[in-house]
Image 1: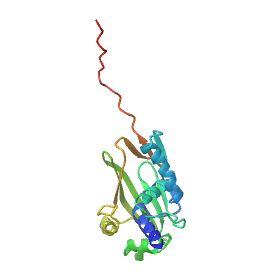
Image 2: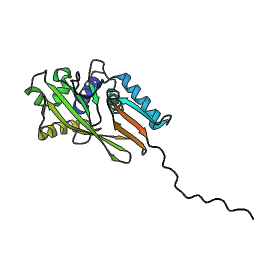
Image 3: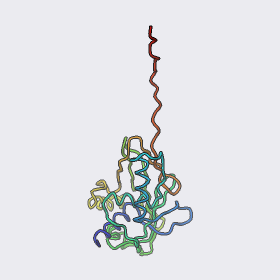
Image 4: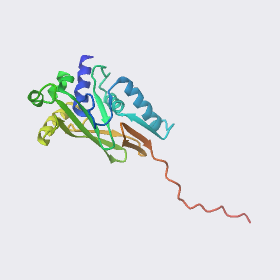
Length: 213
């Protein structure tokens, strides 16, 4: 059980982001939670699987919780305290190094030893459709106390993460999610919007049946 808790903390902190109380001007944030897994799954199933409704909203923390559950990371500890904020342009999370488990800080390498434990780190994740049934979540960057981490540092650090977590790409910065061909994911204010496109109208020319003589 302890190993699973550590794995959740490491993967969530490095890929989904580092969390804490949202500052002014930041996207509305929600916390990771086990209840969030159930709430998100209910929305996804209703829209993409059961087709009982055409659209739904999944709060940021709930969506991240759902993805972690799909990755098989196990139960989310209530003490983790990770939050995820969403607006129309990106997914953003923020927090302090001291809020993370030791294993998660170790994944940050030398960076964790170069700054104070109260240092605020902000992760930015963007989303894009890359295929008929594929949605990509990409870690665009990390900011440490407001300064953008150089790309060569971030690339090296995240490549190490990618080697430890096969669910991510080799770069450690990409997570691909399969959705239905007619499914749509859209970033909204504080939530991920899920929907299915309405069927295309039938444009086939229909000729009236021939009259009987």
